[in-house]
Each structure stands twice: as C-alpha cells, then as structure tokens.
Length: 221
Image (cartoon, rainbow, N blue to C red; front, side, top):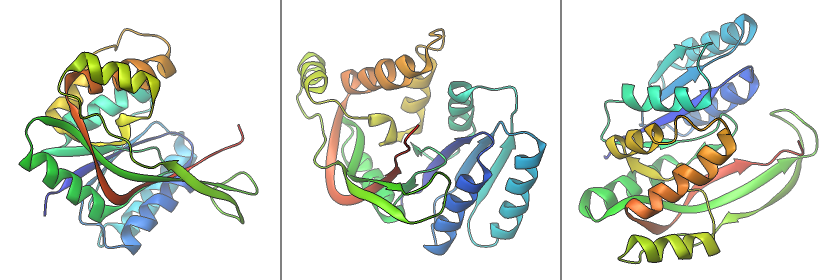
C-alpha cells in the first residue's frame, strides 16, 4: 500500500466536510486525512464532534487555523504530511482510495513523472447544500495527461487542453515546492488555476491511469 496524504482545506462548510469524511469511513479509506479548518466556532465544533466519532475508522489530523487563507492552509497541510505522496481536494469533492494507491505506485515506479491521475466525474444537486436529489452527472475529465518529453511541449499542449493537475497525486516534497511558488500573487484563482497548474506541467510529466479517481461537485454559484 502506497499511502497518500489527503489534504482538505475548509471554512464554514461543516456539512460538506462531514459528508466527505463519512464517505472515506464508509469505504474503509486507508489514507491519512489532513484537515485545515478556518471555520468559526459553530462549524469548528460540528467538525470536531464528527471527527471524534470517525477516528476509530479513519485517520484524521485536524487543525483549526482561522487566520490562514486557502493557499496558506494547503501549504501548511502538505508540510505537515509525513507520507511521501499527497493529493489535494476541496471539502465538497471525493477521491477514490484505491485509485490514490495506484497513482502513488506509478509515481514510485516512474521517477520521470511528477503527477498521476485517473478519470473524473462532475455532479450537481437540485438544491444548494450537501444533500438532496441529483440534478446532473457527467464527465469532469476523461483522459488527461502530459507526456511530452520537453516542458515547452507540455506547456503548449496543456494550454490548448486545460485541466486541473492540482487534484492529481503528487510527491509531497514537489507539491510543497509548487505551493510555495506564487505565494505573493493576490488573486487566488490565478494562483491555483494557472500559476500552479502550469508550473506542475512544466516541471514534469503527468500520467493518466484508467481508473475512477475524482468525483467533484459543481455549484450554481
């Protein structure tokens, strides 16, 4: 088993975080989970109570960091992780534990690759919130990878066929390096969606594995 640190930042969305943690408990997830919570006291107490009830089933490292923003939380969680591999996820998304293991195994056996991922699904609910009737469900991404030998070729291909490698499995040390770069950029969307994604692809190849890897929730807002 190649354990992967699952990194989850959250703020004032306890129903989403609890839903995700309950999912990992229900599928006997073996990977350690690192939560960085910037919530107010009400959501903090809900999260802590739920985590206390789940700790016998899954390993959760909970941290309450109300003064950190999303980017700072991501980096701090990665720096805390003792596992060689990590994967970032939003508090409303789900990673498939078996696929995390397969991606980490690939990276272990292929030092010339920097990231690995499988297929992604996108779903939405009829109403806002963490629970309710399903509205839509379809592909988020299918075969996404960057296997050209040169960084310049990967960059051009990535720009023409964009996806989000932040969700991939990374070597933890490399993920920390990518998170540190761009820390002075004020626009968080530009930082995560562009700076980090392009850096990751420029710095190393990314492999697609034929497995269900990620389930994302879409929101109207």
